[in-house]
Image 1 (cartoon, rainbow, N blue to C red):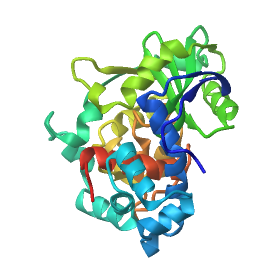
Image 2 (spheres, helix red, strand yellow; image 1 turned 120 degrees about the vertical axis):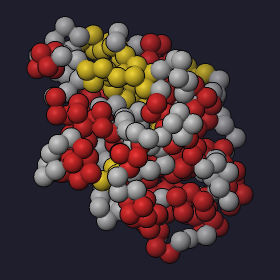
Image 3 (cartoon, rainbow, N blue to C red; image 1 turned 90 degrees about the vertical axis):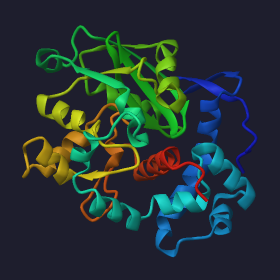
Image 4 (tube, rainbow, N blue to C red; image 1 turned 180 degrees about the vertical axis):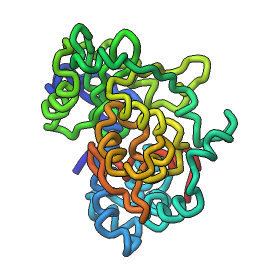
Length: 309
């Protein structure tokens, strides 16, 4: 059984365990996610039965009290409130009530809690020529770090964050290979000291400050970048559909192409591809796994509507 008292979390270098360092808030959240993941997997299999906290706790190997305390610490919600936040019925209701969420997002002011994260992201795009060369001449620094959703692989250029991926233990090499394949001619240098401050800001709502925006850089085709820019307009706590995005990029019949572009989004979480669902309310695919997608949506629900019962 996983200890719940926030043990020291080992630093990671290319997935290898090295000298242990004192636990940080992100390390604690990453440790919590190991339990959260088991709970989310159980909830996903039994969502129609709406299992009680005791049943979820038993399936994850902890007590009901420990699970409740852990969920409150991890996302600000009780397991029951988290379950309600990630049900198919809720997803369907969001789609039905907010069919034009991308239009509505433009009318939200700075006080809109659902846009806190997105409003403080500043983006630019590499030139088409830079993309076509596969990143030739580009130096990308990378590092693995703990996050509320497991291990995060962050990648940056001098112009800003260019990649953010997730991996479960043992999948670090595959995650790195996947990201490197996107820019095959770039030079990659492991430098967790360079990427750690970015990760700390990305997952700390207190750091989402307008006077210090997170700078990101898109490296993709013109169409992909257009789709990714549209994703940034989806407010936290809400969702939209592939077809809605297709309409907004002027390609109403290209929902499948939009789906492919979303699947290639290299900056997960920050560019919220997890907020795109099927017309039916189904979560559909997610490059880093549906369990993680459900976890992220629940975590965000806790930030928008804290202290759920």
